[in-house]
Image 1 (tube, helix red, strand yellow):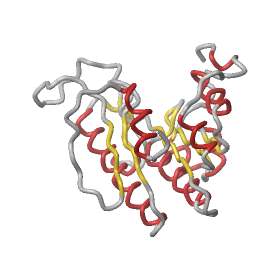
Image 2 (cartoon, helix red, strand yellow; image 1 turned 45 degrees about the horizontal axis):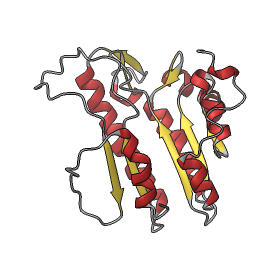
Image 3 (cartoon, helix red, strand yellow; image 1 turned 180 degrees about the vertical axis):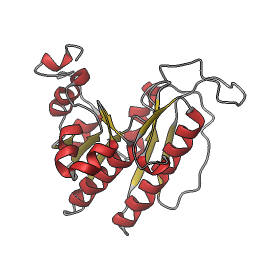
Image 4 (cartoon, one colour; image 1 turned 90 degrees about the horizontal axis):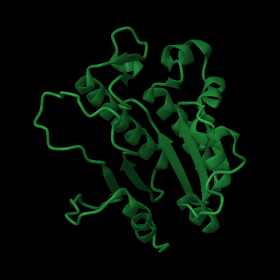
Length: 219
């Protein structure tokens, strides 16, 4: 790791979104397809009100060995398996009437050596690839399939969804065969029955936290 796994807490003196939601009665869950110790992620989550946490070891225990092996790429599993795990956690969260926060972190387009899920490969095994166009198309399909399954599980229960990139790609020299319009982070807010619109006001990732609080009437 990078040393952060040795800390007993992570930003323990700060109030994060998960803390605010926990104080408002939310149950918080987190799913990621990599090791929780890297970057102090487990310490951060445990320091900030996440009660259900699943990383690669929890995923390994939840799926048959052959299925896990097909999705595993050393330090992470493909997005397909991450979303399958997230749907299991979502089903558990729906077991009560409490509001909940479910955070799902993926890695398919993390840097220039991207990952394609099993269903996008020709041999039903997750693969690393330098073909970012193919990887991006696969990732978009993975997200779409997950959201449809998620909304089907959700039923008539109100839900709000946020899609966002966590940071700009490490690799900025990729030729995607399209005009270079500059690298941008993505943040999309999806609300039941609301038509889509682009926010023209300039902002940064620092604005996302208060925007979420305002969107949830917690600000």
